[in-house]
Image (cartoon, rainbow, N blue to C red; front, top):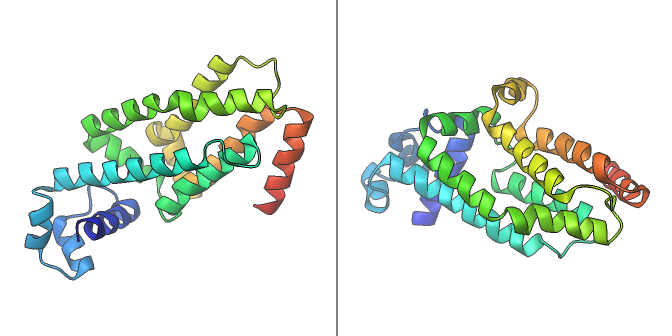
Length: 202
C-alpha cells in the first residue's frame, strides 16, 4: 500500500504540481480513506519527501544499471534520459519542478546535493569513457565540460527561462535537444555518426 500511495502521488504531483495536489485528491484517486494515507505518511510534507526520495532512489538504481552497459557512451546518455522519462510517465512538466523548488527549498537542496554525489559516476565517467573509446574528442576539458553539463541540465528545473518554454515543450523534449547540443559539441566524427543514427531512430 505504501508503494501504491507513492506511485499515485508521483503521478498526481507530476501532472498537477506539488502545491495543488491535496491528501484528499490522492485518497480519492486511489479509492481509499485519507486515514489510510496518514497511517503511512503523517503529513503532506512527509509524503512529498518520501515521493521525492522514491523517485531519486529508483532513478539512481536504474542509472547504475545502465552506466557502462550500453553500446556506446552516447547510447548511455539517451538511455539515462529515457529512464527518467519512463519514471515520470513521460509527462513531467517544468513548472512542476519549479514549483517543487519554490515551495520545498530544503528538499530541493537535499536532492541537489545527492545529484552532486553521483556526479563522478554518471557524468565524468561517461566523458572519460567517451574519450577513451573515440566517441568524444580527446582535446576536451573533461572537468569543465562535466560541470557545464551538470549546471545546464539543472537549469531546466530552476531557471524561469526554461519554465517559459513549457507551454510548447516537455522536460523530455528539452532534455533531448540538450543532449543533441551537448554531444555535437564534444563528439568525434565517429561519435557524430553514432548520434545521427540515434536521432534517426528517435
